[in-house]
Length: 246
Image (cartoon, rainbow, N blue to C red; front, side, top):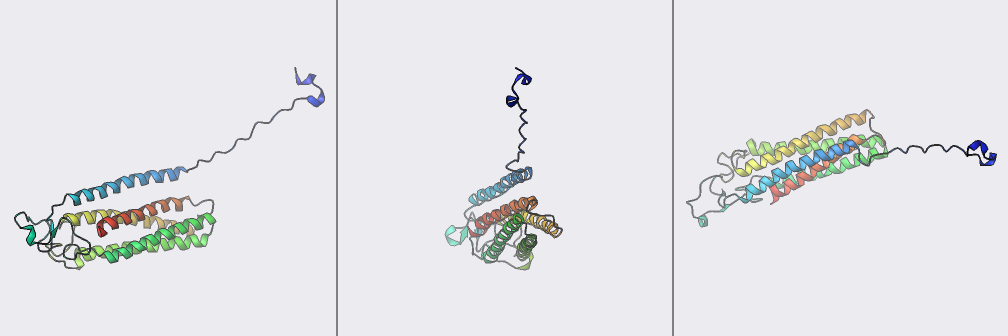
């Protein structure tokens, strides 16, 4: 039956089509890309840390001694007559030159930078432009301080101080003097490069905050770099534990 034959009160009315509901992805492409990048970084540092553990476990029982330089052939020496280990012990200044106290303080600084980075993101979500600038700049300064202390530590180990023979036959702790030294500089050096990249990125964010680029609606770069920075901090806590404390 056509609508023309129906009584006027029963005339059919055209139903408008439903409005399209916009679809928002729960995770932005940028965040997915960052998580994928961090997944590759996890594999990279897992390989480094795993290699360190294997090399340490396979190190000979007489590899490090108070009386002999690392890599000295002690196969003909009675183990009962020397003080030797398969790996340098923490706070054993005759075989281990690492400054645990200074690095513990440096670790605290890096953890503080993770807090200020979180506060920068929180400020961005609230649209507080003044605190965005403050906390980004604080994170940049603390990250730079961490790198400066690490550079100072490297200088002291490589050139600034003279160490006993149990640490190095040359008196300096350099990558070539022992397996322990090679592992130390490789692992902390790669991490230091990651921190440097993070510091540069955070400084770029700080410049953007000065230009007013971040608002409560637009602050994705702060969140992305924040994820990277927290990852770098977590990796350092693991490295500090296994290289300096164990």
